[in-house]
Image (cartoon, rainbow, N blue to C red):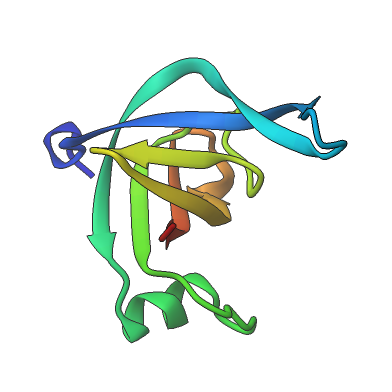
Length: 111
């Protein structure tokens, strides 16, 4: 993978502590990871991609495949924000288990 392939600047956030609301419920806050901004490549997921990424498992849905340099803070609890669009991370793969590159499966959150 060439560094030039990572042309999308995204913001990674993790869930923070729940904040009580006036009606007795809770609101989830989001905290930026450190570093929060990350260069990645975002591609629409094809059936072939999903078969390769999730061999032997079942993925209920994934709309995008995200690749980039490894970020140790990214988990399936993390969300990604790109150009006002929000993505929920559904899968994280540390490619070759070397901590150099990662591949994520993500679902775009439609409000």
